[in-house]
Length: 371
Image (cartoon, rainbow, N blue to C red; front, side, top):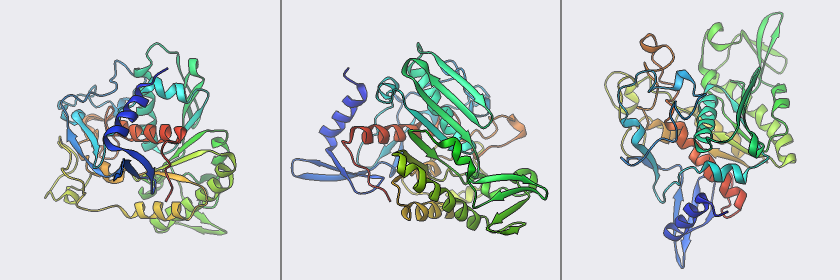
């Protein structure tokens, strides 16, 4: 069958001339003797009145209330009309029917915290809206949620584990073990893994952070510098990936750091946060620059023997100060969520990028070298 996605790629080939890739973000584009480059993650958000969301609460029955900003009363809809425009090419829209045809029989798992939940739910809503006549089955068992499309024997899963490494209940309390990753047993047998972690590492207080002590080696700490702890935890994760995923030919992605917008000074506004924001930051640069955790991720990935593709959504998401639930999340006016993202919204673009990379790698028409 002739696929819409393939047609979109073909058009991209004609107009922007795709050939080869220098790293996980930059596509080298060539036609005849001319060449140019396209970094999928460098660009800007452009207003497009013709742009339509992939789904809403009427086409995704399982959309999560805390992300369903429109149903929660958000009055403005301008934020739904911005699409991501890479500087050197156009990002094709997601084609759900083409995707499940290509990945029939595969198991795809998102692993991480509530930002992974945000992305996973976006992806499953995109699939449900694209394939309304298919049998979609959702099962939840402990930390594992599975969205299965029965006709294609494809499973898109979420495994909730905010730190990736283990938290173990012991006599002294809950211990965050920076050297232990028994959680990894639940990730085996997958064809694609998309990891994410950072959001919870900055939480403080025993109720908020979910642990009482940190263990590194034989030493127990009441606390430590959170960026240092994050680096230790990701190092343990990287060893698991190098040992297991590399030997089992699993495609591995790491979602970049999803930003928050609690401090308007970061985008050169005098006071406030994401509340009431209705437009992205123009241009391609976030005034405050990248968060320190972003550099930790890149350092870890560059030291690995396994090819891990960085889904580098940090800067593009920093520009979307308008994309959070704010007071239109789970708690209404009682809360102000500038961490998670409205659905439909920004995570749909993350999944457009993920799909484009997966399809390209499956076709081997593009070779995404790693960091």
